[in-house]
Amino acid sequence: MHELSVAHAIVTTVVEALPPGSPRVNEVRVRIGALSGVVPEALQFAYEVAVDGTALADTVLLIERVPVTVHCTPCRTDTTLEGITGFACSECGRPTADIVAGKELEVAQVVFSEPATAGRQS
Figure 1 (cartoon, rainbow, N blue to C red):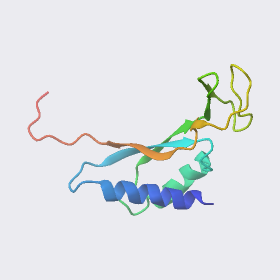
Figure 2 (spheres, helix red, strand yellow):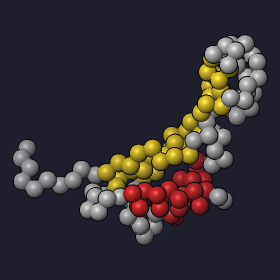
Figure 3 (cartoon, helix red, strand yellow):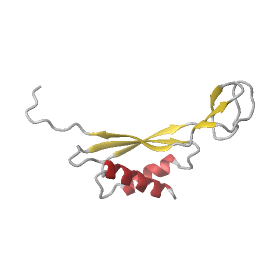
Figure 4 (cartoon, rainbow, N blue to C red):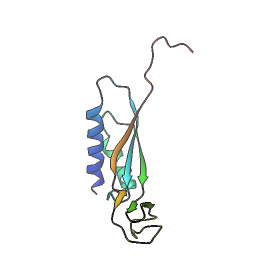
C-alpha cells in the first residue's frame, strides 16, 4: 500500500511548512487526480496512521477527487471523462492523449483554527 508513503509525505510537507507558533491545524485538503494511482479511501486510512504523534494529530483530511480532462487540439475542446478510459473528444470523437487534469496529487490547503484573541469583545 503506497498510500502510507504518500500520507507520510503529506504530513511531512505540511508539518515542515508550519510557521513557529502557528495556530492549531484543523484540516488538510488535498487534490487527488483519477490517474494519480492513489486510492482515496486507502489514503484516508493511511493519513490517520501517519499523523499519530505529529502536530497534525486529530486533524481531518479532506480529499477532492479530480476527474480526467483531455484536450482535443483540432476542436479546441476540453472533455471531462466519466472514467479513466476512452480518451476521446466529446465533440468529434477523435482519440486524444493530451491530458490537462487528472494526474494531480497535491496539498491544496491547510485550514487553521481561529487563533484566540485576548480581550476580544462580542
